[in-house]
Structure formats: C-alpha cells, structure tokens
Picture 1 (tube, helix red, strand yellow):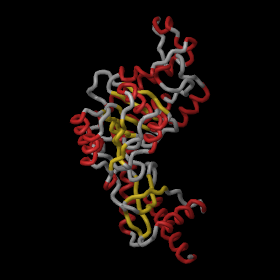
Picture 2: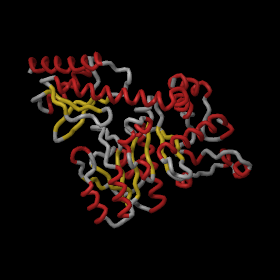
Picture 3: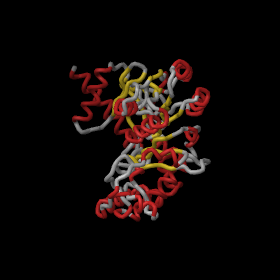
Picture 4: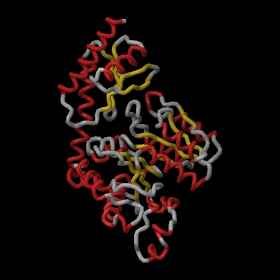
Length: 364
C-alpha cells in the first residue's frame, strides 16, 4: 500500500514548499502530523510534528530548537546513542556531547545524575527508545525524573521503537515517552514505509515557531494574512515530497488493529529466532530481544571469525546480517522487520550461519 501511494505521489509530483503547489497534500499532512503527535502526547493541548527525512534530521531539529531556546546547550547522552546526535552538535556549533556509560545497553542513571550535577550550562538529555546495536530502551521515566530534578530538557530518539505505541501489547515499553520535550519517530522501520518517513514531534505547536522562514515568492505576508497555509516553517527543506500520503494511506487501510498485528508478529518472530539460537549448541545468544534486534555469534569464535563470517555470508549472497559490539565482543546482528518472516526462514538462517562457520573452520 505504501509503495503504491509513493508511486502516486511521484506521478502527481507536488512540492510541499507552498500551499498552491500542494493544497490537498497540505491538508493531509496537517491531519497526519497532528494525529501522530497526539499518539505521543495524548494529554498535551496542541501537540504537533513535522515530517523529516528520517531520524537523523529529526534529531538535528531537536538540538537546533534547544539551541534556539537556550543558546549553546550541552547535550548529555548515553554511549549507545545514535551517531546523529554527535553529528548534529558538530553541524550546529554546539559543545561535543557528554556520553555517559550504558552498562547492559541502557543509560546509567547514576552517571547521568552526576553529569547533570557537575555540568554548568543548559542541558539537553537525549534518551533512546531502540538503540541501533541491541534495540535496548533507556529507562525513560527515570531519566525524565532526573531531568525534572536538574532542570534539563529531554529529547527521546524513538526512531526505532516509537511505533510500539500502536501495539497495546508492547506500548508499555515506552512508558514516559510523553514526558519528553521532543521525540524522534521513523516509520521507515516498524511502520513499513518507503523512505523518507521520519517525524519530529513536540507537545506544543509553538515549540516549532523558530523554524519559521520567510520567502516572499512562497509565503508572502498578504497571502498568509488571507489564510493561505505557510509551509516553510514545516521543514528545514524547501522542495520536499508529499511523504504524508503513503503514511496516511497505510494508517487508513490498516488501522490500529492492523498495525498492532504487524508489530506483534514481528516482535514474536524475533523471540522465535532467539529461541532457535538458544537451542543451537554451536551458537551463543547475547540476550533476549527488547524489540526485534537479535545478537548472536558462533560459540568460541573470536571477533575476526565473526567479522569474516558476516562478510562471507554477504559476499556469497546468502544472508545480510549486521554487526554490533556488546560486552566487549563483536556479534552478528539480525534486525527483524518483516512480519511475514516464517519459522522456516529463521531456521534457514541458522543453518546458513552454522554451515558457513564450519566451512571457514576447515579453510583456516
């Protein structure tokens, strides 16, 4: 559905930089962003969101708006935070982020408390709901409590884990999300959207005001005063595609029940893969998956062997596995995002890994 809608958007080819080029898409985008922001901030009076190219742009907006509010803010994050936070600080001329330890994959609360106590400038704490390495979710409520205590603002990067909001079974993993000053969401992952499908959400619409930009040929004052929507404050970009269409089509067609089913099936598949790994004596499982990322490695293998195994599977066209460092070792990473993956698919992956490991052992 999303791919078909994306094709329609390409054929119609409106540009979302002025209302006269995209009147229907403008109305649709406004409805969509308000609806998704309300999912994140259900009790806020006027939540809103802007569509981004993905999590990286959304995280950059978080730091940009914090800088506009407070000047050169000091970002504090975990060692497992997405690399886009450090890149955004560099691009915006902000101090290098302070990275606190993340034992077990999540932010250390005592270390965060110490950092916020000793640093002497406005703070922006960045927490993560779904790390890239393990899919771990930081203790959002406890982090929000510390931010309140120290007068710091909180941004939550929920690019990966945010869509768990749509699942009654798993949304409790995101408890405390609504306490953030801003949230990153990316439906390119657990929303099954063609890129781009990112969002930057805030609890109050006026928080987006600093994004306003004036270009007379696109948002002349008299047009705006006459009631034509002003779109330049809805993005850092000028020309941009109507990405709202594919997302709205998906939400309209599947509804909450359909999306929840896809999410629940995907997470169940990840747990099934973890079960298969546990039952395979030649493989080690890192931990049970929090979302849908599963780390594993051949028993007794060194990091060089794990890296070679991954590249061999890739070069032979057999399997595409990621890589992640955890607990001082290199792991194979399977991030499951296809709700139609079968137990047979998972067993085939396990068999490929074990047989290829044996092949490598015989040739070395």
